[in-house]
Length: 638
Image (cartoon, rainbow, N blue to C red; front, side, top):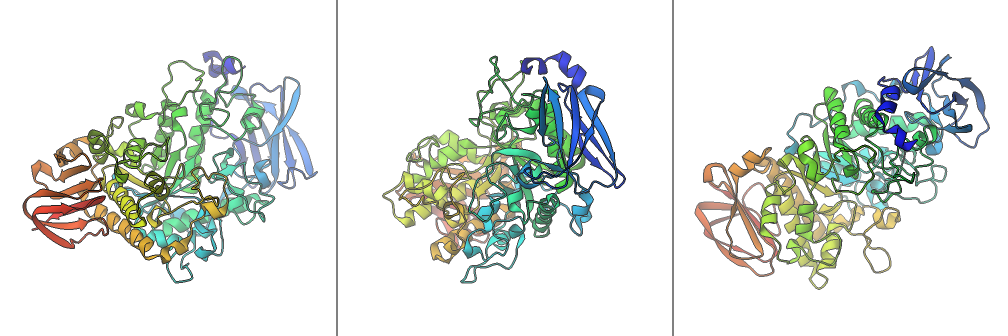
């Protein structure tokens, strides 16, 4: 069957294009529609509760065949709050599974719930909107956070620790009175908060939330359902929906747009995934022997090239944008999804929400595509998805060193790196990007070591003061480079992840809160607070100068000029059109100082190794002395 699924004949006969899959509620009745072309019979099982172990079946309703491989049933009465599963018989085997189009579920996502979605809207939801809607993509500044990490540590002083509602608590401070959580990031100057997966994932048992459990959440179970462990009550399906909407609105009300981390490239367990239970092996790629393709290294790859999988991905992303007002989507391992599907997603979402942003991990993956000639959404195919941006591992690795060996130094830790690569990444056009709007510039995210840990591993004999200078050098480069700046929450606080055994955790996807949580009392340290102010100053500087936020390659080439510096550790750039430099950026990645000539006129220093500001704090003429491991950014003074 997996080979048959991808044939033209199968798709012409069984591609359903309607918008009513799942449970369609009204006060008078609910219409259920299921796509299951291989089934010989189908039914809806109605339950009192969402507990999969409860023996509380209300009744079974037979479904009848309808168009394009779908089955339908209509149940009279108001079913809001009623739980259900779909049952099918395939090859004489009976299977009960959750609805792939479930809008919410009971505990642990095994029973879907019929729901009146409008009853979950917070007050003012109809007027809620993206606070940064309409700004150019290169004006965006993204911080990446995990909902549990954000507030679970006692130093947060949040009430709703580790929950959706904890994300939007204001007025929280450390015991010493320093702002934490949402207030911290409001003052920092970001535009968007990227939240690690918040759909229903499988690695946390929602029945045991009194026990410490942690996972990043890259193990999808129900793509259209909010994760229950972040809600105050995972047993009642409407609660997680209400509280996620409250979180989104609360962030919007505080001037922060919301990016959702989505993981459509694989599922938690392919055999147990509801779509594959109802239509065996349809959702996932299999090779010629029927085993699952595993380019994701998670056991299975999504067969996005199949028409009903592609439709499902388009429907799912559109649903999150429509129903939850999500302002951006970050795609995990998007190199496993075909470009046609990604373009279809963006077209559909942009019909109603033209300002939603899209980006992801465009690594080239080895996957068994079940249709010939399908291009995958990788960096190398960026020309096929012009509205999609990709994480720049190019800037990451040239600055901090190879991701495959955490002890290898990069530019910021004293290594001699290729200047052409440094030039291209600072100008926002690494070799694979068509435009600066396709380059997400970062040196740390949830994957691999934190930036500060990576610095310490690559330069173990340097002092803490030098490590902080290296962190500042990385920040000055990435936050003033062309493209879209991105950083892991806590990078601006010298975030570190000791593993408790004398080492530093590089893959904390299932580590404890002690490893993963943001310790807000780090800010009590003077050096840490100075780094926070340093990032804050860089973001103000970026916002104040249009020349740091150019949107096209043509503008970049007209405005940014790499300057010749006869030192392998130093790169410099003149910034200004028509050869009239209005700014100069200098980055010294070596340990030795260097003196350079300046163009004529007076120059104000706005960035050095310790301070970043919009207003000049030093004036220079003719010559500049650049210390070791030091950025220097200057503006021309009238």
